[in-house]
Image 1 (spheres, helix red, strand yellow):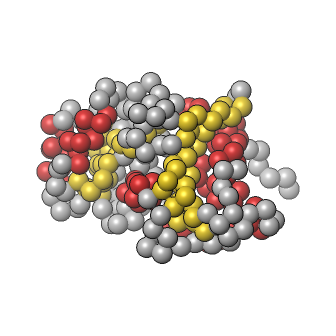
Image 2 (cartoon, one colour):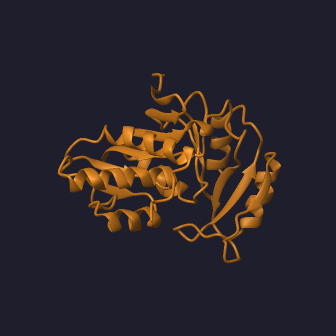
Length: 237
């Protein structure tokens, strides 16, 4: 039986991921992002390692799901405690604006993703072109990870900032739990004109563990679409 045909979007994700993996050099510590696009990164790294085209590479996964996938395909892993400074991280995004600011957290791994990104010299984001947006919040809500203790007070605070707030639910019922056992509040602010200002307000609130606004972290963007693959570098300053 022949394998299922790859969808167009999946093909674009794979193209972007494979281009990003070309930036990995032997001996590097590489942050491994989470989500469907980042999974293509893991598969490509595993193939190059098996073929002997890359050696000495160790991955630091940003989620338990990515850790499980990487182990299953033979990518050597380390923790951030063992490898606290990374040459680069390759990850996906839910939405990307023209300044290469991001919305992340659709898969629930935003806290670990941001920790690993901040520990990396370069952050390479790989997306298909549907993730490009004129303003963050145009397509997706902002994921806000909160402590279960007092989560309703955080929802009221977020509503006071202008969001429509929904607690994320697990498929099996009950609240969705992150890898840290926290809740996620999905906050629809609409298009966000000043994402850095909103990020600062969220970071100042006790009980909010992390948010899905990734401001000034992206070094490079690799985006794929019908016309091929484009590699963008964030402007200095």
